[in-house]
Image (cartoon, rainbow, N blue to C red; front, top):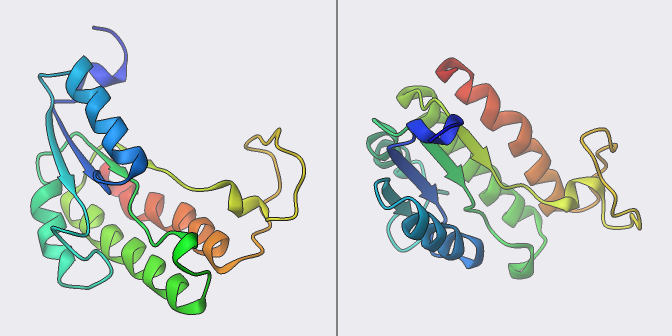
Length: 154
């Protein structure tokens, strides 16, 4: 096996029971059965509460990579309260990343960081970020926060 994924022996997926998470985990199990795959979702830990951080530290220890899919979906309400919950999730996960020193991090953000009024779907890393919703603002803030917390792992 070549490439960076060859050394992934243990993978933690936050939000493994959601739409993307179930499909991602199914694919990993089918193509990489040797990977120890751990999933954390709302039914096992409320990531918006500080009590989740020690659990995450335990899950992250020994992990070669963490994939973050967890969050409060915009469909559940684009409100300041949902923003606060999404920021609490990012903060708690950041604390755990900082403590556990996970070498690889993948965060699934959203096109909403570019704003809802954009008609340009040809986005790149150079496309200006202009969130216009609480959801987009929380995703953008998480894009900044999570790598800072994980930086000690690189």
